[in-house]
Length: 188
Image: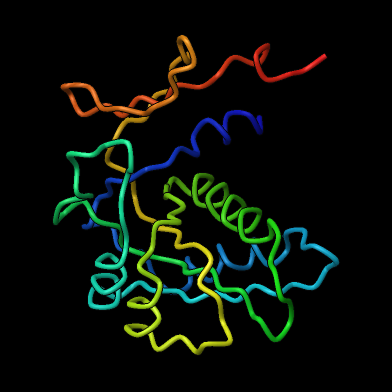
């Protein structure tokens, strides 16, 4: 059932670094994104894939993790992503990218969940530094980074109470994500 796949697709931020990702796996995820809808079918997105430890370290250093967990600097050594896909917008094809990168990222994360993997879309990126480290040409706008790997954390969905939607971790390290009720979301 599709809803089960959606429930497996959480924003994971801790991974098993002994489970490496390879170029082929990342290429397969990009292929799923490639087949997704695109505004006016322009298909302006390009992808930078990373699976080697040294490039992953460079990318990791350019990311901010979990804004609501203010006392957590991000995954520690041994729990960092083993692959990344940097989503780029080709400015030679389009001036703006609408929601194409969100559609692509979600598609890749659903495909990853289907393979027993997990990930997180990260928009808080030190873009100038990442561009420099990866030698990304100026014609590409850095839109999102998708961090990927084999999750080692438990993420549960809770009912949001009194509009409180800030995610949090309990004393056992379980990541709790409050969600608004369906009745609250549908306007009649």
